[in-house]
Structure formats: C-alpha cells, structure tokens
Length: 97
Image (tube, rainbow, N blue to C red):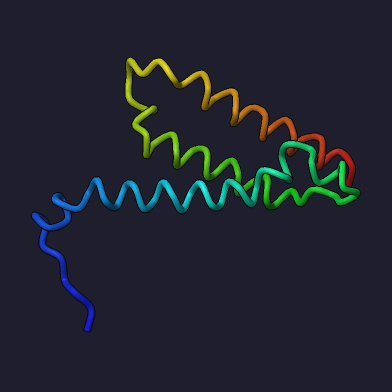
C-alpha cells in the first residue's frame, strides 16, 4: 500500500527530495548533452531536436531547483548562457530540416 505523507513529513524530506531530483535531472542532462555540444556530429550522427528541447526543460527546472530564479542570485548568468547555447543549437538543427 502507498504511504501517505503528512505535510510535516514532506517538509522534513524536502532536502532529500531536492537531492534526488538534482541527480535525476543530471542524468537526463548527460543524455541530452551530446545533442547540444556537437559531439554526436563528430561521431557522424545527427542531433535530435526533441532532445535539445528536453535539455531546455532540464535547465529551466534546475534553475528553479537551485533557486536561481529568485532575485539577487549571482549565478543566473551561467544558467542563462547554458539555455542560450541550447536554444542556439536547436536553431541550427531546425535549419537543417
């Protein structure tokens, strides 16, 4: 039977859940990266635009998970530049169709 968590238990497990989500998003990003960084093309394969879209979603979720969407956070530039790289790459892939 599924365990029903109370609000207090959810609050107590927030840090643990954040760590699990971070690991899982990093695993997805590792799968997406070859579609973004050009390494697939170096091996003779074509990047999949769907994977690039997934990459944008992962970056946006990581941005929120790390709290970079909150005012006064200095590291936003790194995430934004990563997102711009992915969007630029998506444009290159889309242009080939």
